Image (cartoon, rainbow, N blue to C red; front, side):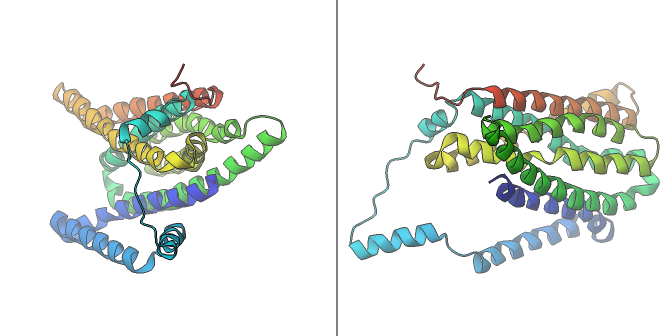
Amino acid sequence: AAFANSLYGGGIYLGGALASLSILLDNSLGWRGALGAIGLYGLVCALLSVLVLQADPKVVDDESNFKISGKSKEMEPVSVIEDAKAVLSTSRVRWLFLASFTRFCSGLCIGVWGASYFRSAFPDDATSYAVVNAFIVGLCGVTSGILGGVLSDKAAEVANEQGIEENQGRLAIPIVGSLLAVPSWWLAVNSSTFQLSMIWLGVEYLVAECWFGSTVAVLQSSVGKERGGTAQGMFTLTGAIGNLAPSLLGVLYGQATSQGVENQVALSNLLGVAVCTGYLISAVCFFLSSQAPTIDESNN
């Protein structure tokens, strides 16, 4: 399950690599032309999805059975709030959402402000950064995600053999990955040369991006199939709310520069502290999730 989810998550990092290359579009076409090219690309992808993706076989079989039996398909009333409460009824899932939120915050701060920092810190290598970052995100991010899924499934098997709950084994992967990401990112934004900074950035992606597959696998197994869609939607929502983190960082950056702090220094300090703090908190929350009970606490 973790491996399957990590394959899905790999698309995020491939998209991130293309996003980095959009800097080259901006240089050659200008910002209007770059946005137009990106919008056109999105429309083409949407069209390909309609033409290529097959219908869910479960839905097709279900509809066929209703047609054969001559019965009408009645939808059961859905309560979003009640389903959300049910998803959050265990402390494991609550800690898992908090860990995911802080992890999203760190990743989004890097995604939004990383390019600005590296281009200001190494202005002579701005064009090289677009290509190198695309390579790092595409290769290291995808590798970390898929390898994290494989290791998570293996850790679940080992834990099961030793009489330990398999989800505790799965969560060991994001715990270790988040902890290793702290020094890696700090060194990436505090290196004196572009080459050394990119090396540590690659290391950071390799150790940090292993969390997605195992986290979604634990979430799905903790809430049950009937609420899997609600849980997945809430997981995505934590990422959307996490967009507040780079916005807040931008406010702090503006305040720091208005007080006379050099742009590069201010951004380096803010990125270092904010991202590393997010990684550290996520590691703690992943650990607490692994140790939390899985029973429904809503009636206690």
